[in-house]
Length: 414
Image (cartoon, rainbow, N blue to C red; front, side, top):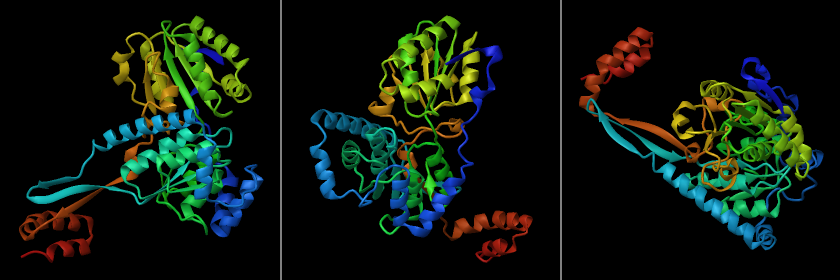
């Protein structure tokens, strides 16, 4: 981890990790669209996911998966599902159907769930049953009828998590080919209306490519965390939280914004000691070496850096942090205080861990129940309402030179 002063901060701190100039992504998508299932089998073998006999996880395989998952793991998954579901239900309560009137005209909207959703669950480096929980549960709470899950090298624990979360179909594929299959369909997999879930830069590039043919949640690449901490924070907590992001991927990033160089060095030294015994050090060390700390003089400087970086995970661990919550606006999810561990959000607190990265948090929040519903408006005008609206509509149509519009308005005049 490199340490900078605010005055000579490296602009690399604010750069995105590119993911949109990957030619192989387009080639794979085109191949899947053309050749369907056979291309999925071929790519699974080519990318090291192994030779697979069936794309879909069968009911019998699901039953066997339960037999191979111990009671403690089942209990943890169920607890996470319960908390995520409860929070999603409370979020859904925040929006409701609207039926009102404006100048006598009946207007409103309906909250309608989408018909189908595809949940991408990474599995290349590690099995991620937590992502099954985070993506499938809010979709089902929203009322989505068909929810499918795609995951490479899928393990029994992920199969069980998908089933408990409510997945209707589970497929053992990943990568770009899984995104293409969910977007366009194959002989086995019917296409979905929207694709959600995190992934590496190739998966993100694929989501960007298929957007428009189906919906996506947002473009989210490798994981990142930014921690704002003063000397009252615990260096070992900050170090562990940084490594927790770094172990995801060699492209992951951890950022520390603090108020003294001595604190930055303590965090760095602590993390380096942790790496000596960390089982995932091969990946985490690479990411940590690419990460950096910035020493600032004021909280205003810290806020400025955080707002520009717009991190996926933002931890604020300094005195009176609660007073500054409203000053931070660009983040995927916020963790306040030393004991609000980011890992709790990853697994079981109830908020979602599928979050925007690469500064997407400037204009988008994390995955939620809202991603699986549509707010669709309606109007109902009677004859009298129409007479009041005709003059205005006709005038605006004339101004725009759209004379069929004007006709459609005028023809309803008494």
